[in-house]
Structures are given as structure tokens and as C-alpha cells.
Amino acid sequence: MYVFSFEKLEVWQNARGLILDIYKLTGKFPSNELFGITSQIKRSSSSIATNIAEGTSRNSNKDKAHFLTISYASAMETLNHLIIAKDLNYISDIDYIESREKIEKICNQINSLKKYYLSKE
Image 1: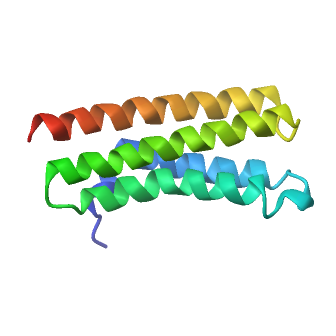
Image 2 (image 1 turned 30 degrees about the horizontal axis):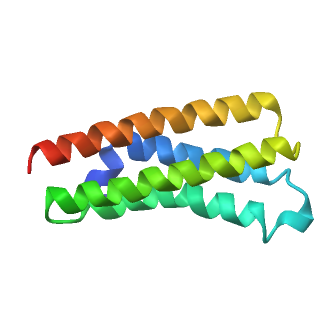
Image 3 (image 1 turned 135 degrees about the horizontal axis):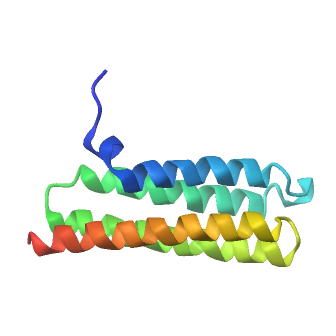
């Protein structure tokens, strides 16, 4: 089976892991939040990896960097949802800290990859 370039990126692999973590966490959210914060955090976390993958298919490094900017913004949206979920006691302090640390690592990786692409312009 062919492995696409985005699948080889550690940042994409980490973002993919975050999605799985988010899906597990939101399984514990109240059912009345299904179309609220549950849906939003699933979508924003998925968008992190999706934009990394989509960006790698672009021709110019400037375009690739643009999709990484979108990915970073989705990470910030995901973090915001995690903060609200913690405030509402939907997730524990430990789950919040672990998820936040993963997001911080992913954001650092996104920024590094973006700088790399822009340096090649």
C-alpha cells in the first residue's frame, strides 16, 4: 500500500492521535451536548490533521504554509473547547492537562513545519 507524504509527518500522526483522544473524551460528555460542544470539538480536532494533509498536496510552499495556518487555528479552537469542557466539568483536570500538552506539541510542530516551507519560498 502506498503511503502518502502527509502520513509520514510526525505532526500529522500526533494530530491523528489527538482526534482519537478527543473522540474518547467526548464519549463521556452529556447527551444534550451532542450537537453542541461535542460536535464542535470533534470537528475542530479533525480539522487540524485534515488541513495538514490537504496542505501537503499543494504545489507552492506558500500554499502549504497557508494550510498550516488554518491547522494551527483549528488547534486553538480545539483548545478553547477543551477549556470550556473543563469549566463545565465534562473532563477531568488530568485529561485537560494531557490534551493541552498534546495540542501545545502539535502547535510547535505546525509552526516549525510552516517556517520550513516559508524558508524555501
